[in-house]
Length: 205
Image (tube, rainbow, N blue to C red; front, side, top):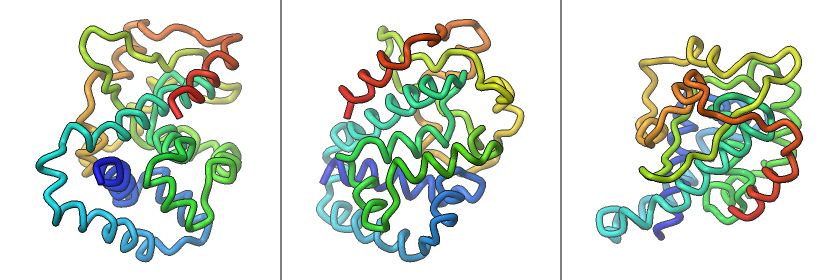
C-alpha cells in the first residue's frame, strides 16, 4: 500500500486547499468533492490500519517524489519560473501509475481535459502556491526556468499571491525553494528544449 498512501494523501491535501487549483478543476468538472474525499479516505484507512504508514515511511514517499519532479517538468513545459500547485495537480494526472490519478480517472478526470480547462483560465494557470523541490542534497534540481508565456507572469509574482496561512503541510515539507532559486538566477532557460523535457517526463512516468 505504500504508493497508494503517498499519492492519495497528497491528493487529499490538495483537495482540502480551498484556494488551490485541484479543487477548482475538480468542481468545474462537476465532481462531488464529498464523494471524492470519501473515496480517497477509504483507500488510506486500510493502509493506516495495517501500520504501513509507520513502518514504510520511505516507500510511501516514492510516488510523491516522482510527482513533485514531474511538477517541475510541467512548469518548464509551460515556460514558468516556478512549479505551483497547478503543475503538481497536472503532474499527478500525467503519472498514470499513482493511485491518486487512478481515483481521478474513475471520476472521468484526466490530464488532457484538466489541461484544456487550465489553459483557458489565466488566473488558475498562474497557480495559488509555489512548491518546493525535494531534490536530495548533492543532486541538481530539475529547474523550472524559462521565459513566461505571452501575457503571463513571472514565477516571482506567484509568491505575492500565495497564502502564508494555508494548511498545506504535505506540499510544504519538501526541500529546496524553487522561488528562491529563480530569484538567484539558478534556473536555466528552456527555449527550444520542449521535446527534451517531454522525454524526461515520459521517462519518469
